[in-house]
Image 1: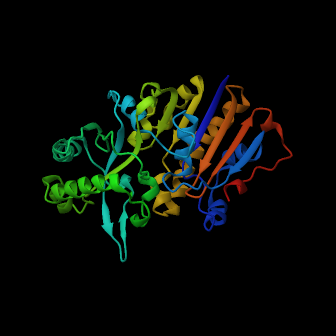
Image 2: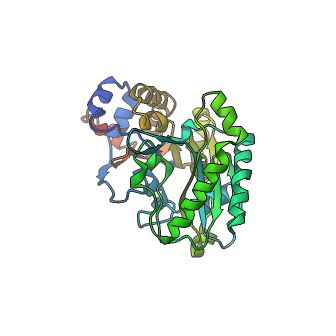
Image 3: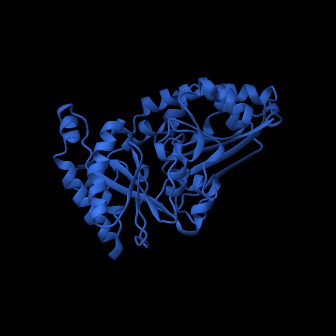
Length: 342
């Protein structure tokens, strides 16, 4: 029988909206999974401002870090069939920065959709600038590149989801070595300003790609140990996260494959709505998970195909961790409720 860990980024609505969301959500299977448990705990909000709770949880769970950092670069490279060698690599995410009334703000990178042709064209322009200052840039997919900068240490940069729709002043790296990164970012921004890809995007009223966002650095002694996780599957997650595992699900129709092998499943379809505070879209995303994921998992628990299910739910503010089993689901005296989401 399988043991499954289900990670649901942004499945916890923000506290000020949670009561209304719980009243509106019709999810009896999820209510049973969260109410009839063998263990339940809430993790306190981490002090780090460089990653979201589910990102630090994944880094720790996958053995990549235990200090609140998210050194995903090398593991993501290997998942995208790139050999990192012995270098120190950073994930590069092409993004859109806009000027708000009093500050700069980076949009959710899910809203900056790039096909492979446009991604490679922008990559080529940036790669030339990187090579001129002695740094190699590697292409993973349209949204996931990697920069080698062995001497860029001592400063932390935040994940794209951490900074999405936030004041960038709080997240820009500081220090002598960070200045080299900021200079490179400015040069790339200037090269992209009049790039044909952005001209075409502007004509279509799409967000232009004007940001060269660096994060997730890893390398050194950890390089050889970081391999894609065999029993990790993902659905609707950013490319860097999908690259950490060996199975990418285009839909949840193949859930039986996950149930058969067990392991870790990350379902990220709630991210865009949650980051935009689109709670109608969030409710629709949760309803899809109820029908395609929570109800089948509850049935699998009851008929013995799944022995233990662990649910890890998160928001910007924190993380909740629940474990349920077939035996726990027999606790009929516990009324199924979604109050755990509040």
